[in-house]
Image 1 (spheres, rainbow, N blue to C red):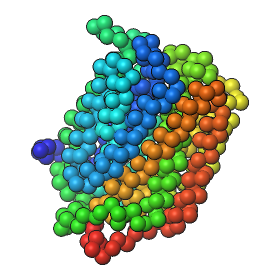
Image 2 (image 1 turned 135 degrees about the horizontal axis):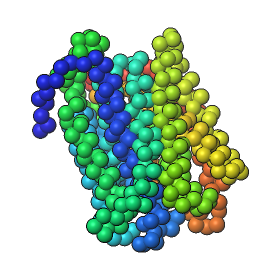
Image 3 (image 1 turned 180 degrees about the vertical axis):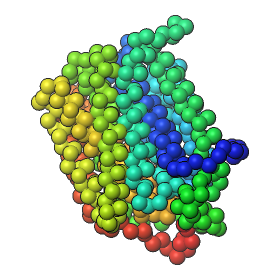
Length: 439
């Protein structure tokens, strides 16, 4: 049982502080995900890892990540955001640290599986935080702030991990092992911040009078009788659910390829060493953080200007999607332009991702948002597995990165068409009568 005792005075804009708290957790998760892609060159000095094996390691993470995205979403709906997020953060931090004890590829794969189990609940928890703490007009901005943690974690990861590999070999332990020990420790430290700072609005001792009035509808719904449990089959009967899953399947395939293979592309195709990767690979992730804020902010700005939710979300999604084909040009340009093109793609991807993550809160009741977000995340993880496996096979069979970049560059445009076809109007969906007593 997590204590809820806290006597700090009330503060204005508390909900935005909570958005930054969750953004920090997302940053740690993306730092943890980058540990293996960046440190793989050093790990190969102790045991061999081919492109195909690396793809298998990435897939090990993504498979359990996707499955736990559903399980983690359900966990959030059952345990509540405060307790559920605490549990998953402890789990993924310990899983990250466990990589440092690996004695071979099998042990690394086991650690990747465990990391995926832990991190799978992160974004469903973030989606629930937004649904609990923000009115509709502010949700896209809030999710933009939270999702900016992906960029922040990616910015920190290359120089931080490179610094550890170059400078840290305490107690005679290989430097790449310290990468996992230290990043795992950061996650455990975050849980102390979470326990001290996060409570639902109805229970938060520092909620100001202004914010209490703003969030009164949410608080009233929280205090209402517990709604009936909605089975998964009820949520899967909507074409909108499948539209979101399909769109995420396509676009996360591209995103995970960029995230997991960019450091290796720079090492293999552009002749970088670990120091050079650390000095430059953070730049696209900085652009990604900007994309999170711009995408969410644009949608909220359009809403405040009088556009419908449907128009505001889809205009911003379309503008994000049109940026993505630029990566097809990467094999034909010099290194500075490579970084620029990846930066544009990272910006567009995370602008897109912020908006897709908020769509379940526009369509579904709050008590099932975590579950729906889990389905959507599972679709994204499976897309990442398929494209990652394809990339590993192609590279080990004499192909260049060009065909994979062409595929990745087209996926967001296809995903936008999927959304236009299957999510025709962003209005609350009507559940069957026996499930309608839900906030």
